[in-house]
Length: 623
Image (cartoon, rainbow, N blue to C red; front, side, top):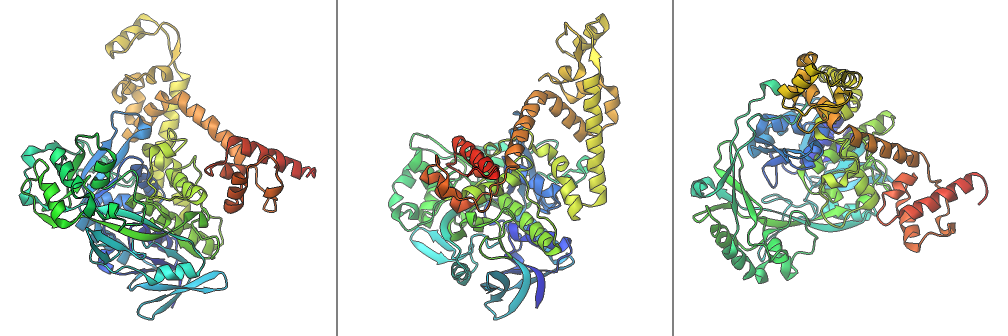
């Protein structure tokens, strides 16, 4: 059987890859081990968070599915860091894990051009240096022009619960061992990583009265720009906060000798920024307590996920440490926590399109590239699906710059720097985060999504109206002035604003930290007809005007560097002044531009300057 695109895996990366390629007109096949697990949330029952929320908004602006499904199945919506600047705020939603999975599977099975097979891929078929198809454990062979691997934690997946080890890609599901061997045979370098999950507790056995309640936002904001914000009124359930204590830590410490993390049983490197509870207790002995977030898994709230207690300790130790926590004294465990080790592909072997450098037509997306998190996976899946489809159509790839999207930062970090531990997105990774806010992801990326055919006309028109309103509002703020007349001073005093002493633009007044949308409407009554989203953008742009201009200047400098291409035939060894380490990295990664070279870990500004001089000399024939 012949397809345009085959997607291996039905997780968050696989879904976005398959939907994107099918919606772009490609005959697509998704092959997954269990069809009912398409869209399963393997770990925590939440989507988004700090920086991760940015990714979901960007996925949505490009025409992906994650934000829409979250809005349909979310059971609590919150803006994290709401009191801080807009660049570091993050949307987060608790999801009904069951409904999310069912909704996603329904979307996948109902999408034209997309077929699903419940099988396990064992081998990538090649002809020369090109991938041409796959062979499954049932002996079936499927051919395709492009193949996208999105296997998550399933490649030689090994679960650890105390001394017990089980070959599995997720609790109760087969591991994929043969595919790992096939990738090695193709010459790809594989590494080993580790992640983990927490126990799930029977809701009947939790005393919530002993915990701090954490409600959702009173006015929840949907994830998707395509969801009607005015009529968004989801049923919201509270989460709860409790804490570990000295007794909890003593129980864990006294069982370090039974922890796979410390006995040498686990070989893979775990996520630095989301460590297991035993790792936290070991590394932060001075901490008297650690947060535990008690989160409902479904709308029925029959099970709760104890976020912050990821562990691979034996079952008896897990139960003892859980019961030492306030409110969980009588807890009964429905599902024990576990750690899982799995193979991943060194992402420096990939192009920015996520196609492998050595094997044409073969793409990797998601945790197979060394990332952790649903959002990072979905972002890569979407881009792999888009670029595979564009390549089939003979069109230029979509490669987002670091100045355009967090997705651009994510992929650029992976393919130029690689990773030795599970990679997680943070706002601090984005140099231009003031420009790459959650709230303007539609303005930044929806034109791409519309051009690709992934964003419908109505959504695109809505975004364009918002853009026009923002431009109009900012223009008026810049052109109109206030002078310190009696009427003006009285007007400012009435709004609770400080007086002005000189003629000033309305933009300078709106830039004050005390200024709100309500005050903006009094300053410019004509804005009352604008959308709430447009008014929010006008206020943000006014407040951060000077900082935004500085970042735009940085981007212009970066673009000048990007324009300087590094010749493919450049003899790196012949460049004097570069250290051996820099030369080795340049030869290994072969960056196409000076900017790409500057993003490689260990390549100094001085090395970039030497490269720039050498390239200019080469162009003039002086070397």
